[in-house]
Amino acid sequence: MNSPYSFADWQAGKRPKKGWDCADAIDDGWTGKQLDAFMRATARPWTPPQQAGKAAEDAPPQAERLPVGGNGSGASETPRIKPKIAVVKGEIHRAVQLAIAVLSNQETGIFARADELVRPVTHLAPSQTLTVTKQGENVSRPDGSVIVTTLTEAALVEVLTERALFVKFNLRVKDFVPCDCPPEVARTILARKGHNWTMPRLRAVISAPTLRPDGTVINEPGYDAKTGLLLVGERLWRHVPENPSKREAVDALAVLSEPIASLPFVSESDRAAALALLITSVLRPGLKAAPMFAVSAPSAGTGKSLVVDVAAVMATGRRVAVITPTPDEAELEKRIGACALAGDQILSIDNVTHILRSDQLCQMLTQDEVQVRVLGSSKNVRIPATSLICATGNNLTVYGDLNRRTIQIRLDAKMERPEERHFKFDAIDLAMRKRPELVAAALTIVRAYWSAGLPNMAPPMGNFEDWSGLVRSSLIWLGLADCRGDVAAQRAADPEKDELAEIIEALPIGPFTAREIGIRVAESPLLREALSFFMERNGVFSSKRFGRYLARYSGTRIGGRCIEQMPRDNSNSSVWRIAGDDRDPSKSSQGEPEIGMADW
Image (cartoon, rainbow, N blue to C red):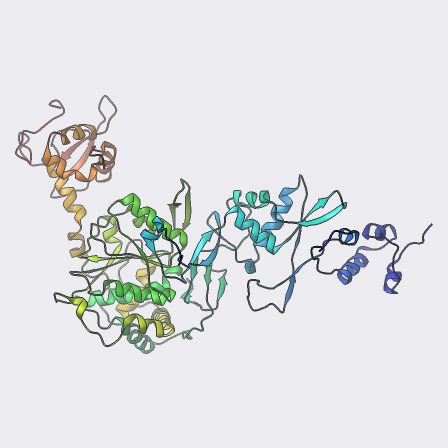
């Protein structure tokens, strides 16, 4: 009988018998510590065999070494060991948990965004193609923009295969051999939708320093666990004083004003609003919510897009991502949702020629998270709402609730061809060259106001209290006009009130239902004109949409009158009437006999 091969024999340099393995070592009386020391000393990287042979078959899979960080992080001289994940039938949950642990390492570059797994990528438009996609027509972003993409099953399989050593048992060699990450492992991870995920949570990818909620600055590249923000890029940023004085804030304001100094603002409040836009472009990822900025002018070429591009250069180093406008609310929501899913830091609905209205825009401006539809799919995804939204247009008009969620920036060159003006410098080129100074100036202004104790804070702006308390109030503290401008004039110009007044005037005094109005629309051209918004593309009146409109504006008074809901009729339909109406019941507003329910 052969004598045991002891740990001391191995230390003395003696070789074991042929075929001796760890199971034999246990039989020979080796302890766990001795086995661990033996494995650490004898482990070597495994490489696929070049040709079949017994030596290759007998070689057990070993840990593979990868550079820390991977993907050219610059730390390739420091190796790390790929974790081994054994795939065993009946124990897929163990492989899934180990795979989640691999993905939870920040160096992997995979993040959890709501209930999706994502990773940041650099956007590059196709340079050699004859096909222009619909998305390319509707959303345009500069090359080099950093966006977020959702990981598919195949992409997750690739990442896990690269970052971990998967092994499965091979009956032929009676041992574990390397394999790719099984698709069912990736599929199970994605199907969990956040359950037991330990991956770092991503709020937004940023390309410039910003402030945390406690006022400290994020200026080091990488993931910030406190805020969920990922700062990308290797640029060296200017130091922002911890407690800057008001004098330093005034100097910073002069720096920040330089790129937009030549623009023809209508009033000082419009200039303050433009400066608020520049500051907000840097602070938006750390704010709970921020208003939309609408840049308007009487004619093209005044500089509307220029203001937004300067803000985008500060935040991203590139011009703004542009959305093609459309009066179709559903289509506009798809385009906005596509940008939100991609994580665009700042986006612009450019050259709007119609009344801008969108319920989804209202939600994106005020909610911390928003639900958007994935293009080409019926799936809805809930994501953080962190994009700064802008809109530009000639005499731009904003509708309803969106109006009070908007900061207006008005420009007027007071000339027939403003695009022919000559400027002393290129504002975009200046912003590119002085980007670190501009970002530091924006942060210095807010930090100085913070250090001063937030004195004389402006009256709160509904849904945007933190933005108003920092951005708006800091500019007022420095002696600028209130960037909200003339709120009363903006509300008076809201087309929502004009539309509601016109509809109330057109509706009959007596009780009516939405369906009865639909029948009457076909008979009355004046009523059809007043309710044209509720006509579908095929020319059919939408009673459902009109019923929702009546419910939404029930009790809203215009000129002493309002829409009022009455008890339901025998058919259980909602019945409405115009309350507080002083018109002659025997006459309608169009001079036609009033139509009551009995007449219909």
